[in-house]
Length: 222
Image (cartoon, rainbow, N blue to C red; front, side, top):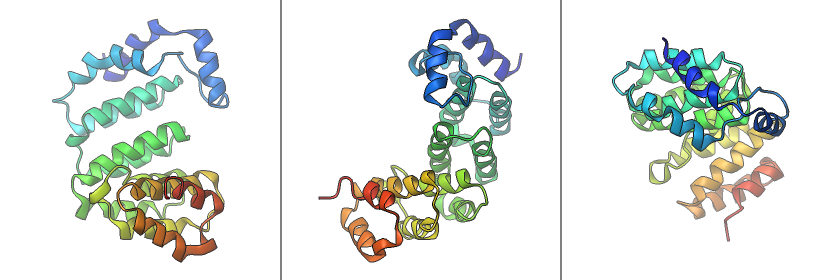
């Protein structure tokens, strides 16, 4: 039985149609759900995920790709949990595969989680892997650009402010809500480490940034 089949076999008995309807409605009825809360899903799959610590990165990415084809959204969430648990096994060659997942069945829930997974992988070898992000921020797909904008979330002192501010400038002209929100979120996160740098950037940019981006970025600045 494949990894994806094992995941589905474990999750299917937990299906709750009433909860599934509520979860689907929250996601604007774009996706089907089993109706399984996150804690229950993770507890059910914990042993399976732990048991794959020796699996090759290509096997894990293959399993994630198979899970991405399942109709229930929890299968994509399970794939992300699997990748996050074993992200240290990925190298430069696998960044593009993670970005490719972000372009399938895309919405903020999976894309933002993949941004964290991708960022963790990039952080492990920044000089080499951030070049992938330099390409991603120029990608035609907006979700790929969102991953690039958010990939340094939580990096604090490891953040490359030149890239953070440069990406924000590059994307500032875009009208899409998810891009504008990502700009503000990325800046706000870095402001927890270096508020003066973010304050100075906002001042220098003036009206170049959208009101949404500026509002999000300055949310915790005094």
